[in-house]
Length: 187
Image (cartoon, rainbow, N blue to C red; front, side):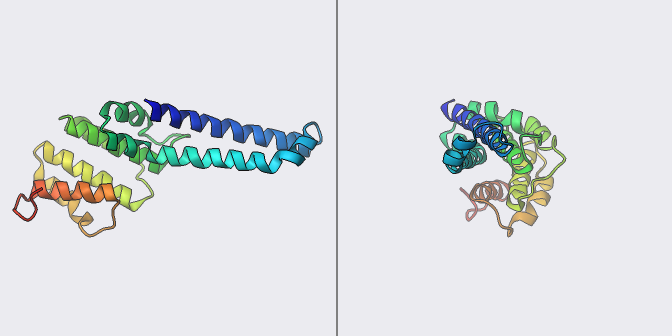
C-alpha cells in the first residue's frame, strides 16, 4: 500500500505545485503580488514543480510493474483496475498498462472471462505498439484458459517477431510454451 500512497501523493504534489507556481507567476506578471518572490525564487520553483511532475509520471508508468514484481495481486487490482480506462487524468498508454496488469492478475486467479471483459472494455488502443502486443498476448492467454486455443494462436501469431517489452517477451514465451508443449518450448 505504501507504493500506491506514494504514487498518489506525488501526483497530488505535482498538480498542486504546478498550479501554485503558475498562480505565483501570473500574480507577478500582472504586478498584483509576489513580484520580488518570483524574481528571486521563480526558477527554483519551476525546477521543483518539474521534478515533481517527472517523478509522478515515472511512478504512474511503473507502479503496476513494481507491484507485479512484488507479487501483490490485491494491490495491483486496487490500484490498476479503477485506472484501466482512458479518462482526463489517465492517458491511453497508462490505462493500457493498468488494464494489462489487472487482466493478468485476474487470469492467474482463474478468472479468464473477467480478464477478457476488462481487456475489451476500452475501445482506444494504446499508442505504444509493444504495449498493444502485450495486451494481445494477455488476451490470447485468457482465450487459451477458456479453451479457445485456435483463437489464441491466431491472435498471437503477428507478435512472434514484433518488438515487445521485456514483460511482453516473457508473456509470449510462456504462452507459446502452453500452446505448443514440445520439449524445446517447455518451460
